[in-house]
Length: 268
Image (cartoon, rainbow, N blue to C red; front, side, top):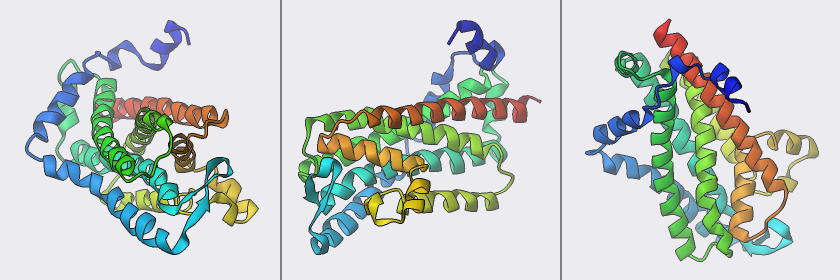
């Protein structure tokens, strides 16, 4: 992509290269609320023990990536890691951002400084990534200690899960700029819950009818689950590049739309 095209997409007046100050503000605001931040880590952990360990004792072994058999807990754990990245990023980029945008008027104050809408978008998404990175590191450590991973490629799950969180945070922020009231957040739940349940999170894709399988493969969480499951099982396939490309495009489009919408809402 040429420099000229980049500046046509991101005009210089929208980006002052000071996104780090937005991250610094989030750190200072939350420095006394670390228990609230860390509480998000336990949601995936509870699901792992309830569904993976508890329910898994009734199921036994299942067929995982590459046709290898594994325990149900090992099958579900990487999917919960992907779902954790999605939930953490979306909630931080929707509920928190909407309050700051509509009620606290935080961004009006920020844009009265040399900051631009792209600084705000990049800063807020970076903060969401920091939180997602903390959750992912903790969850990966737990499933490694429990012996639910079988490959050294698992180490790559951390940067990949951050890419997944980046994509969901960017799209979540873009969607939030179109929301008019708290009632619109019912649509967020309407999108997240089916994705969580029907993206091969708890069951393989093959158990569903062929028509539904095609629809489920459109879900972003499905691509995240396939990536996490392949990395933790040590099954590396060329299809993973397609999954990664999906999230790169999703992140770029989401970030551009979010920044332009913030500029239109706050600077027009």
